[in-house]
Image 1 (cartoon, rainbow, N blue to C red):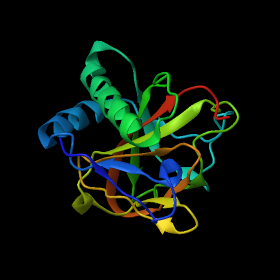
Image 2: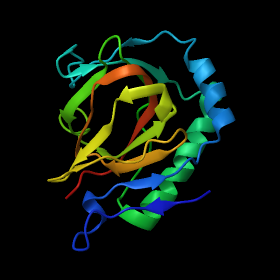
Image 3: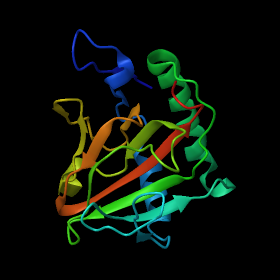
Image 4: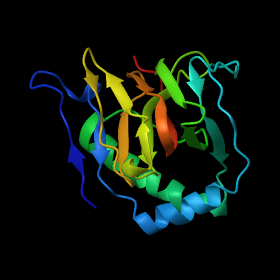
Length: 195
């Protein structure tokens, strides 16, 4: 498995960087996972601790992967990737993947998107590291870019099987999907509050 790091500038440290694994999930495993997940009952995604629908801010469908034998292998892989990334790059105090992984589908028919936000806040103040695994090939959709805002807009790699990690306090969004469908697995690692 190849691991790559990326820095935005020569003067900053890793606290406003993202970390990536290029094509670290084999394509056949992704295809099997997608086939399984596409049989699940997807629901409209919500925003905030109150779980409100707000289609101006977010428009996508989601399914939460339970921590059961059915999804054991993908959780095991995520833990392995998180441990390596955190040891080599962030050195955050992390405890666990408290929340279930989220399968997120952005369709062009809905102009699927998620406006600028951070992944921590009221109700989620223990989130420290955010993970996005790309389950779609870039040829399957247009738009739908994951963008990070560090004072400049950064667009991480999005090849199928690529996993991107970044601190949960980083401002980010998914731009509207204008053609096709974008599929991802998203997770958050918790730990003691930043001090």
